[in-house]
Image 1: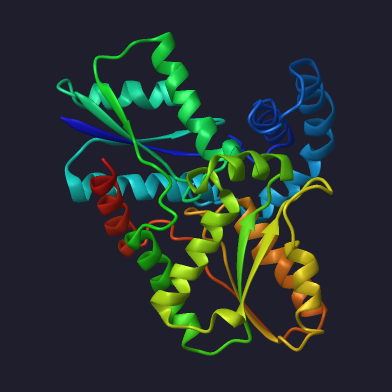
Image 2: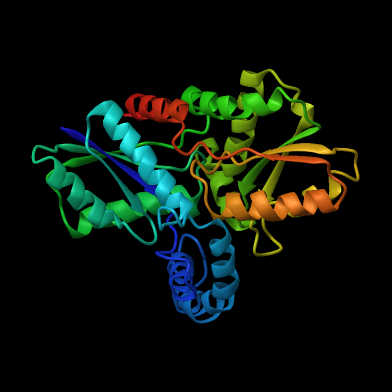
Length: 322
């Protein structure tokens, strides 16, 4: 029997400062995230950056934490997506996080426990566009797990689906009711990356080219909705250095009203599940910057999460890609 393993980035176990610090340290200790020598990366990640950022990040998490379900929105939304896919396919489905819990080994063990006749696991990295700090690190992590502990089943890994019609359709469906109300600018916000990472991917070709894949996603969504691409704006969030992808989300939000764009719709196609960057950085901070600069209407489009059209679309992506 075939099983499905859905992998997302992860989030802190709780919104406490200590758990947030641990999560930041774990993520930044990944050599595919922070590309500096090992000795320097460990020191920077766990001794300097994580302690410095923990308090602020914890306060931000407290504003968006899902207290009803006592977990982060990212974990809740990813689990709900998995549950719906399992119900629709009658196949065992588990989730894992690249950093934090549930871990990849734990999820693989759960899949095996669910189905003694498991012969294949389809791995679904929830990253539509390729980046070494998201898609590649997940692929390497699960490969390393199989190297350490051989399993009785084989793996198939779903490739980035930035141009898959089912993904494009789901994004279009999430946007459609907001587009119908009218707008001045449609802002597509993606996670920023160091320019060094971008250049490595660009040199390898379009299958690894983050910026190319972003532009294709935006182009195809615009085509599906039959909207004016001149009203689109691609921006990047969460840059932590000068030599990162621009234009910056918040700088753009402060400038748009000055340029006459008073009604803005913002969507984050690179994040299939709502998380700190979508709910806080855009839903709170970017909105605030836009309104203070003279904006009149800011519409934040939630991530695809576990909407039925995304459940159906992702099932088709899994089927088509393998």
